[in-house]
Length: 256
Image 1: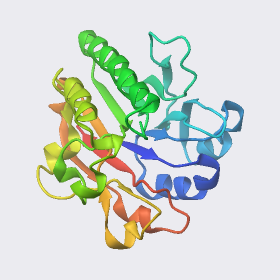
Image 2: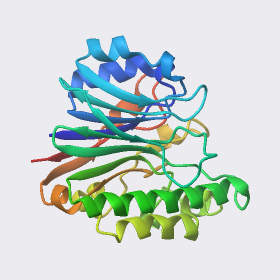
Image 3: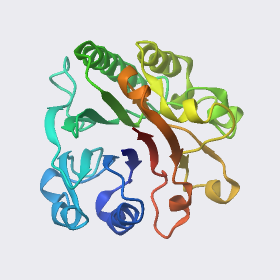
Image 4: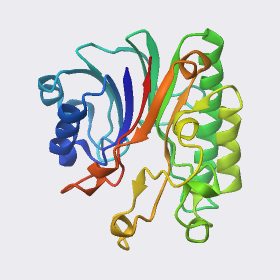
C-alpha cells in the first residue's frame, strides 16, 4: 500500500498536475495540503473521475487539507485540533482508510520569527503532539502525513546558513518536532534514506529548483505497527520540474 503526502499549493491551479500524478503513480492514499479553496470549491468530480474518494477541510485562499483514497471512501474521524476554539485555520483532517488512521497536516509556517506567527506555530505543534499521543494510545495503525514546515536536522537543508533565521529550523521548531517523534513515531523517509540530501521543497525564487537548493519539510510519521510494515519511502522529485508544478514534490511510503 502506497501512502503519499503532497502540498499542491493551490488545488485549482494545480489540478492538472495532481490528476496527472494520480494517474501515473496510483497511490492508494493521498494527503493533500494547501488547497487554498473553500469546501464548495473542492474539485470532487475530477478527483472521483481519477478513481478517488475524498474528505476535505477547505479554506478560501489559504491552508486547506484533504485525504484521498483510491477506489475507496475515507471516513472522516476529526477535523481541526482541540483546545483552541478560536483557531480558524484549516490545517488538520483525520480519517479511517483501508484499516489505517491517516491524518493530513499543514503545520503553520511561523515566519517571521520571533513574533505572533511563530508563537502560533509552537502552540499548534503542542496541540498536534497531544493528538499524536492520543492516537498512539488507541493502538491502531496510524500515519501522520503532511507539510510540517520543519527542517528536522541540518542535513535536511541545502544551506544551514541560508535558513538559519527561518522559523522552519529554529531550535524550538525542531524540539517540538522531536517531542512528537519521541512519543514513538518513525520518520519514514529517514528510515529508508538515513543520510544525504532528500529534498521535498524547492522555492520558486532564486533559481532554487535548477540549483537543487531544496529542503525536507514534508514528512510521513508512522506509528509502531505501521513502521514494522515499512517497505520503502521516497520523493517523486521529477514532478517538481513539470510545467506549473507545485513548489513541493509528492513524498511517499510503501507499507505491507
